[in-house]
Image (cartoon, rainbow, N blue to C red; front, side, top):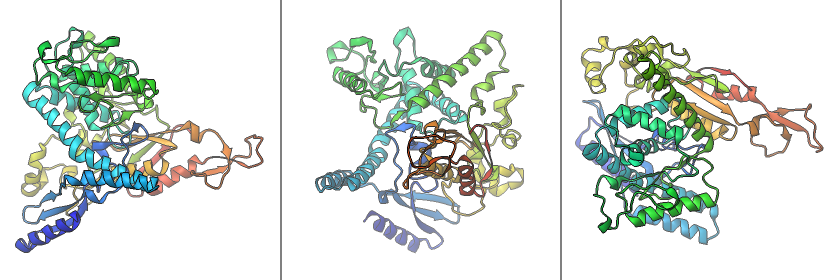
Length: 493
């Protein structure tokens, strides 16, 4: 019904404005059904994977030909969430668990887009505008650090909302005698320290937005600085909310759900289900990189030189099992890479991780690009002369790299982990899952992998043994990425 209504609106608009065009699209087209950069979702983000198209995500793009602008129109029906929840319950009663699970996923997605995300956005906006202006710079630095180390976005599953909550915590949490950071740079260093030192399986990690919106007072039933078991809660949180956070953390610990996983809770999300829980593998990677970045910053402060400072935003590639190098012309978001001014020192950056074309181009403000493309296209760098490298009109939000990564995750998600810089990176790094790729297994008809015979493997079973065919999988990944993949190099098999 919503789609039909949107189509009717489009017909009415084009009747009044014949020069315009209206197309029915899906809000996740171009970035994958998992909502790409904003939502994340993979085996490394537990509870955030929603890889399913849903007709409620349909919208219309109104393209004004004269100005070249495109407006996206969607509909929100408040009863839709209630109907989805009721439908899922009916499917369970009818004995259709698969249908119930699909509808529950659609309901979760609807709740995420129309309830959780708007509330989170308002909280972050209020924190930045009314209380701590430096939060916005801290968030940008933290997201850039995560993306440069290929730990942000669709492939890995670190949602942007989690990064924003981590940055908010260092401004709202003043435990240990620390005051809030005075600058965005200080906030970024605090975030690195947080990632490097926090014991996720022992202490509850809670972001308290109420600490800045209400004054601490024992008469108003506000909790003190400490609770039982040494768990610290910000002084602005009500006692009931603090107890709920503590109970949810204790339940997760009792059921062995923590496992040293990064878990961020809030007053409205005590069980940390809104944005998922990062896996232990990703949490350990974050801790290692944060410690190395802090050591680099401390070294620069001790020596009084910033020559090694760019290494904080440079990730080593020799830790990965294989590297997929993409054609730069096929990366639609390459203009989001760091400009040359970000590397003004003499620090040597690895060739695989730097974008030489982008480093040699001048900085141009994004809001000036549309005007400059029309008035002075000759003064623009080659990568900024077109809104997309395919020179096709009306391609809104199309990101072939994100779609390629999504396809790889869907097909090979059980046998590999993928990492990439969502801000225009041309490298996709991967790790093999040793439980799948290194051990021969007996052959079965329903084995979900590309395998080859392993006659050298010894087993007591009468069935022939097979092993993961890495060479064939690499060829398949090259075929899937035809047109955007330049080369795939296997460093370890």
